[in-house]
View 1: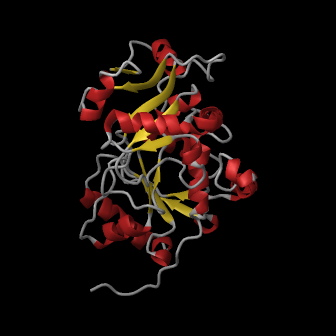
View 2: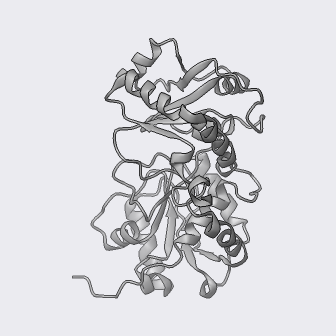
Length: 328
């Protein structure tokens, strides 16, 4: 019963395994080819957190995984050269063809012809931003960074919650879909561009039963929605395989997923089904609990985004040992 009602996919395994990770996990960081710069603040925060964490070891012989650091603007040719140098200078890549290595790249790597890049893309764990670039994410191997929250001055969902709107969505000003136009003309939904300040946004989240996100647009506010008790509704017409923390939490327990083809009627039907038998409150309660995992701290704290990302890497430490063979 606990397994089916829990936020976590396997709570009896997660908590002791998390403690084991804290006590045992070791990562060796290669020296980058040049000073690092990142295109995303989340990517930068991950790197600074990792660099100063107790997970890093100076002894590669005790490492479970190896981090390959390179800047966001580094060319694929330079990345390939960096990996080739690692092969020559260290014995660790060649033991697994890079399967016990990982790297961070919000842009993601494509499929290149260079052997080193092929091994990096195919075998190593890629840490991407969320949502991951289409065609540059390998499910079950790669990981996405929980998005960085933009509201930090309020710490939890407001009490005595009254839903003024059925749903709230922020329009990112880039592309307005047909569904968004339909929602804008329905008085049950509030659709607006970025609120003027953080308190206004908190008010929107606190007065809306659901927060709508079109997958592929700006979905970075999903952690904020969870924290303030606004149940995320992800609008997508294809399976989502790059959800943050997908190895750990039951997303169906904290969010609603609905297609766009049925328009507003389909969205409303999905929300009506969700709210039967007090299921809304269950989603909201577990969502608020899950929100602790979507917080990035300058000094990492237990169970925050950084530690949950490390836990997903920990789950991947038992890398596949590829047999060595000569390439033509």
